[in-house]
Each structure stands twice: as C-alpha cells, then as structure tokens.
Length: 407
Image 1 (cartoon, rainbow, N blue to C red):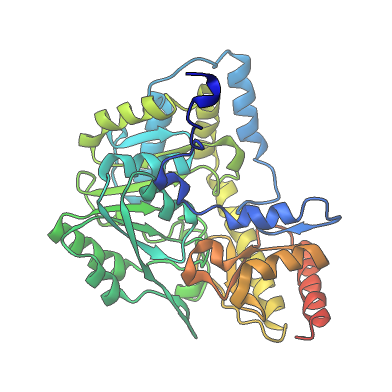
Image 2 (cartoon, rainbow, N blue to C red):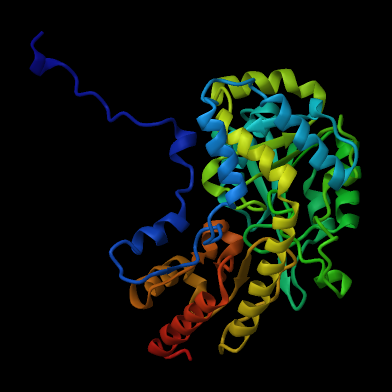
C-alpha cells in the first residue's frame, strides 16, 4: 500500500467534555480592547494596587535564602499553622490537620471537585456565578444544574425554598459562592443554617467558595460599618470540621495577591491523605517562597485588610451613587465582594454591548452573560480602584449612551 492509499486521519480534538466548556467572555471583551488607546479596564476582579510591601519583602527574603525547593504537598507546616490560627480567629477552633495549601483559589476549587464528584454525578450551583465554578465539575463529567438568584428592590436575593427543592437526595455536591462574584450577594446565617441542615440529612457535600469573605460591608445589615465585623457569614461558623463541608479561600482578594496564585482549603481531616495525592498529581506543591509570603500576609496583614475593606466600601458607595444618576441604569449597593452588577440599556445582549463600549469609548466592563444565562441583562464593574478612575468610567458610560440615543 502506498502512502497515497492510507486513510486521511481525522482532526485531533480534545474530549467532548472539554470541548463543551464555555470560553471566558470576560477575556473576549478584554481581547476586543487590544489596540484601543486609553482603555479603562474594570473587567477583571482585581485591584489596581500592587501587593503590600511587607508581603513582597517576605517573598524576596525567602528567595534570597534559597526557598526554591519542593515542599510538602499540603503546604509548609508554618503556613498551615498560621492559616489554622487565622481561621480559628474568624470562625472557631481549626487545627492545621484541616488545612491544605493550594496553588491558587481556583486550583483549590478543582481539587475540591476532584475529591468528591465524578462522571455522572449531579451538582447544584447558585447563579449568576463566576464561570470557573460551573465549568470545573463538567471537566470531571458531572452534570451541573443551577438555581438562580432573583433581582428586585432589595438587590440580589436567594429563593431558599427553590434551592432546598433542587437539593434532592441524588445530589452529590452544592456549590455556593458567598460573597458572590458577580452580584455581591451574601448568604445570610439563617440561609446557611437551613442549607447545612438539609445537606446533612441527604449526605450532600457543600463546597463553599469564600474567597471574598473579608470583603464584606456589614453596614448594609447592621446600619453602621465596623472593621470589627471582619468576615461575611461562613459555613465554617456552623459546621464541624469533620463533616461534608469544604471551604475554599485565596490570598488574592484580602491581601491583593492575585498574581501570586496561592490559596487554601479547610476540609475534614479524613480527606487530607487523598487531597495530598491530588495535589501531587496536579501541581505537587505551591512554591516555597510564595508560601513564605502567605505567612506574612496572615500574620501581619490584619490592619491592611481592614483598611482595604474601608477603601473598597468608599469606592462601592461612590460608584453606586454615580451610576444611580445615569438614566436607564438600575444599580443596588452589594453586601460584599468588589463588584456592582447592574442593568443598563442594551444589556439584554451584554456581550455585544460590552464589546461596543470598549471599542467606542474605551470602557471595559464584563458582560453579565459571562456568568451564565441568569446574568444576561446585567454588566459587572469592578470598583477596586480610586474614585477619580471610577468617575472617568461613568463619564464614558454616559457618552456611550448619548451616542446611542439612550441618554
């Protein structure tokens, strides 16, 4: 047989579950901004400030001392101990036996899913939601169903009965992100208590993404902000450390360490040996010098985090006031996180709208559709920057609406 007689090979493709994953529409909008002069980017979930010097200095010192080798899969003992102390101060006694260090919060989410779900399992997620959480179980072959938050005069709210009805006995895992990206919704203590009791009855795992727990504006509920209201309600406040609750956290938000890729998991001690295997087969370990920076963050960073929350609250209030003056915009002050998720003219096709805004006026915000069908009709604006930058963005929004005859 000659070479010309050989069958033409088929096009090589990834497996179907991977090909079916949603691409990031936030990245799609950001890509539309390449080559556009003077873009104001509010699309990504990070501050425009660099990581504090005391954290950067700790990493530099660790590098200078030669902290460049492999570490324990679950993290170096001093960081696990520091995190145990930190979690204990916020949520009650927690030992390092329940702590695993991960290479970023999103890696922690993947590890948590790998621990408890597989092909054919049923997963429930509360949406709108950062797309990574919805797509990660699908990579593993799980089936994801969603329960949508509702939007009204009080902002974003959960229909608790609808969620409980969706959590049937055949459900393997519930995904909750509170404070929520993109809406800023915060699950109340009463809602958490009801959901935890229901999941206990049916043996359902709760994976709680609490990355934004410190970015919580207690004034919205209590009437007066106090930096002593240090964290949003957490499942860790209610659950024992050895039941079916896995809490995921990250250094990215509370200490402005997005590029460092460092996170942690609080989980039952019975999972740790198997979790160590998964870490080995995913990343082996987080970098040693980055873990040293993490120690500095949790041991020295409390004052910084409290000041950061005050700054973010001021920016939140400033942006909500400014957007409230724009005709056609419906915006409510969120209880937590670092975003406003608001409706505006044209947002029923939010991806096209956001691409047009970045092209025409250099305003970069994230389309609501990036966070699932339930987010369509809204756009997300990250307010983790100074108020002058926010004002410039609002002026561009007004200009865009005027150009399109909607202002």
